[in-house]
Image (cartoon, rainbow, N blue to C red; front, top):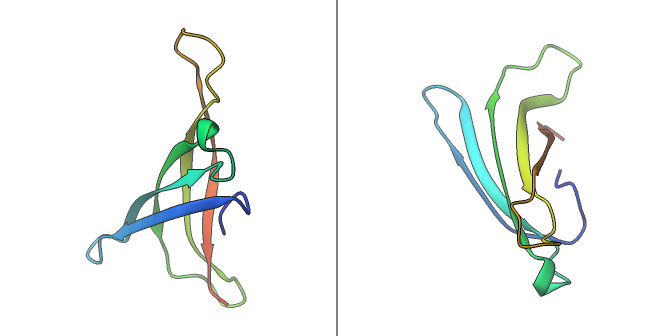
Length: 83
C-alpha cells in the first residue's frame, strides 16, 4: 500500500528473472508546491503459508524544501501484500 492517501503517479517495474522491483510515486499531490517524487526498490518473495507479504523494500522521500540548502532524505519500508 502507498504511505499516504494523497499519493499519485505510481510506477512499478518488476524483473521477472530476479524478483527485484523498482518504482516511484508522487507524494503531496493535493499541494502542488510540496509535491515530492518518492523512489523505492525491493524484492519479491514466495511467502510462507499464512503470510500475505510477497514483497519488501525501502523508499527514499525527499524532505519538503524549507531553505536553499540541500535537505536530507527520509527513508522507510514499503511492502506488497496479496489479498
